[in-house]
Amino acid sequence: MSARPLKLGIAGIGRAFSFMIPTFRDDPRVTIVAGFDPREEARSRFMQDFGAPAFASMEELCASDVDAIYIASPHQFHAPQVAMAAAHGKHVLVEKPMALSLADCQAMIDVTRKAGVHLIVGHSHSFDAPIRKMAELVSSGAYGTLRMITAMNFTDFMFRPRRPEELDTAQGGGVIYNQAPHQVEMIRLIAGGRVKSVRAMAGVWDAHRPTEGAYNAFLTFENDVSATMTYSGYAHFDSDEWLDWTNELGLKKDPKNYGTARKAILASGNLAEESALKNARNYGGSAYADLSDLNARQHQTFGFMLASCERGDLRAFGDGVRIYGDAAQEFLALDPPKVPRSEVTDELVAAVFDNVAPLHSGEWSLATMEVCLALLQSAREGREITLQHQVGLP
Ligand SMILES: NC(=O)c1ccc[n+]([C@@H]2O[C@H](COP(=O)([O-])OP(=O)(O)OC[C@H]3O[C@@H](n4cnc5c(N)ncnc54)[C@H](O)[C@@H]3O)[C@@H](O)[C@H]2O)c1
Image 1 (spheres, rainbow, N blue to C red):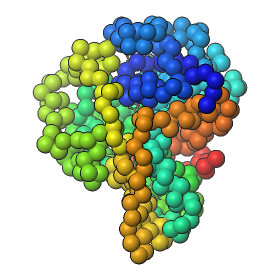
Image 2 (image 1 turned 90 degrees about the vertical axis):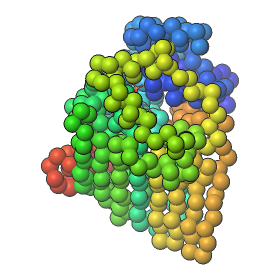
Image 3 (image 1 turned 120 degrees about the vertical axis):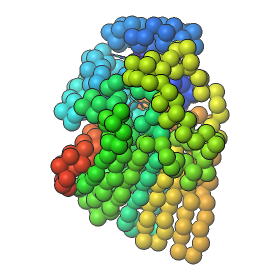
Image 4 (image 1 turned 90 degrees about the horizontal axis):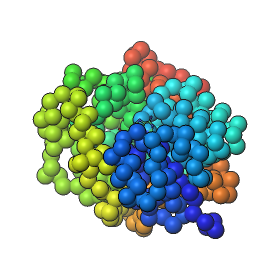
């Protein structure tokens, strides 16, 4: 461990940041020293919670004494804010999706490389310990050659309160920009990274929420692995049922709360009201519910994940990996997380203090975005798309 904690600045003190609070606050390797957000209520709560300045401009944050900046602003700001952080010599952790276009992703890679700072994209669920363990077991060869991956997630994503741009695909709305990066990252990590082609269909099933809320995709890999990837954000079936009712954050879920997200949105009436509801529930807002002290007993999850090898199927759960072998099944339990998403800090600290190249690098993440954009293109054009910017595991 380094002699001092990493000094972290936060750009975008909103919903994504609220998920990362325990990750940074409860890990002695990191200290939150400054923030930036245009919302006054977010700034004032941040100053109270962290005893650190919260600025109203990115320039002030970049000029402050931070080693790295976690950029958790809405997607459209990722590329310009990465450029500004890099110009000030700050390392960057930027939220997924990396950016809305491959050109922006490439610009982010170029600008950080030129400045000699590290670029990490995350959190995504490929950081989760059970997924890492599955990747490790597959690459050990103990279960023979990997042949197929099956990923399925059924959630209420489409009925969570949204900003207008989150319901507009052209501005990065919908499940392909927002949820597919998780599934693509998990699958690429287990299969080795290099996707060859994508065929997908996507659906806009709710006229009031005019962006893709569901998809089915078929991926082929250069090493002859194939994967199917299914996502529905329309909140009927909930695939957390298959994870013993553990939710995305690794917390227990009460199945009796069926359909609450959909009911709340239908009650809210129009998009302006919905944006106000999102803001009220956001960090610093009047209805903000601080989840950061809830003690997750399990790792984070992202639906059903199965890797099929010639001599066994491996399946991810919040508390470990179930192995269905030739002769028997066994459960490989993982220690519960001390700090949620601490794998992100592992990568960030190693990069900043020890110059270790991150797994979730710009190049790796550009390749993930290429797959997501191919999903959209395939769904629109009704054909298989061949990929060109794929990279393998470092
Ligand atoms: N990895 C995850 O689990 C996860 C979860 C949620 C969101 N995200 C990602 O995080 C990003 C933010 O999403 P969110 O749901 O937190 O959105 P949000 O609406 O909560 O916005 C984030 C914050 O950014 C602020 N903001 C607005 N304009 C800004 C600007 N120009 N510069 C800096 N901050 C600005 C907002 O006031 C808000 O506080 C998105 O890219 C999203 O995909 C990731």
